[in-house]
Length: 307
Image (cartoon, rainbow, N blue to C red; front, side, top):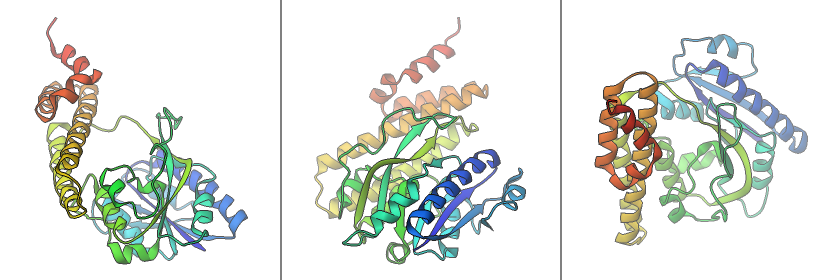
């Protein structure tokens, strides 16, 4: 079996080194156990740091992004891939040494499936896990369109996908800057069966990114609403009830509040008080219940009150 690993990146040289080290270790284990061959494709979105110099010292294929953003980067990698099994990793995350081997073994089982997926941990800035593996068990298997509509399975960094699945489902929607994985995995769910691996194999690094501000959050919120509309239409086709669609809408509002308060954290660290104020108001308009239940909302609110 030939494996292709696809890593989109931009200006994260130090994080990327750690990600590539984890890929190298995981591929070595799989090669020893299963005799795989592999390629690692890193798609650079115009880095201005030392990324390209570092990649020149690695056994990887470095490609320029033919578009902009993570969706275009992944599509660039998919189109260039020669492997029959495609795996993905973000440049600030890491795999365990067992990751590739577990997926190769799962794809060797009968009956064959189009996609396998494992669990992952949210992790701190040093990649130490901060909770239990996600998604929570029991993990759905087979034709799992309903579970996909609920957003229970969507992280491509935990997936191993047969190349032909993309021929049937299509590639990432490059117009989306958020929820692009959720939108594509719903399409994949219509053409492929899933096989779960109940083991954590990915660590998702949580760290403070550069502040984008209120307008950046607005753009994300608009795309979340667009993907929610697509999800609602697919749910209706599958016979999901209006109450189910309402609950899904409420969950998306809760996620948007979470993103608004996360952006408020970034803006506060950058001294952008005006953006913090607008983000708190936006969180209240989006879902007052989710906003006031979040400790970050009250913390930022107190910081804005003159003493």
